[in-house]
Length: 313
Image 1 (cartoon, rainbow, N blue to C red):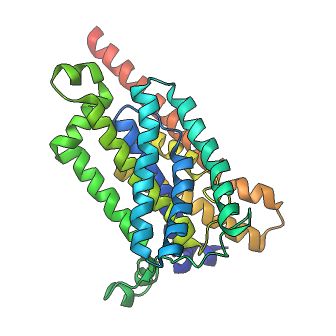
Image 2 (image 1 turned 90 degrees about the vertical axis):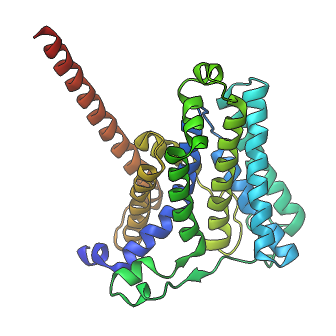
């Protein structure tokens, strides 16, 4: 078992498994920072996963498929924003509606185009290549882990770093965080609340698009019904751990990648029921989240106790 965990291939798989959840977590982080609760991340990823496959198949151009998928992600996020922010609909209800439309709509489109309800293997879609990084690929162990990943994985790391810099180092990011913390105060200060929330929704849509495309055009070579498989919902747990910080969210997502890769070991070397094995990543994250929340409450109580003692003195 230790050989399995110490293998560079294991950790390479961890990074690959982390990619879609990391992008979904980035989307959730942006929503938290802008004061929006977006349950539609799951459905947006699913729609974008199919869009990239279909457009790249019909145009035979990877980048056209990528751009259209990104635009679709932004469009779906804006639709959610229109009903939730402008029409003042309940955010959770709007998110559930998008997810239901995505679940049924992707199957409908898939059947129309391929005649299959299961996958898009009938379409000759294009995929993102794996990239070997010069010099790094020659480093023992580290080269195996970091080099040879899918292009979307490297894009995800770049987008996380760029978004983190934008949130904390630019006026736009400061305004987005101000809107999320206190919309009334931000409005009084002359900040356009709706504009900045829609900017956050656009970034959310881009992250969801790449997360969906990674699943259908990176990790796999075709679209499969329901292939997002709860990763959008899992991002909400990662967001709770990171409290809206993209860098911490990226590190939190590694927990999912780690637990998801362990399931491979369990499937190969254990006699545990397959359904229990498939549930392991989600159970693992729930346990970790409960522990983290308990630690945070203990720290808060300790601070309150120290504050009360200092006031009494």
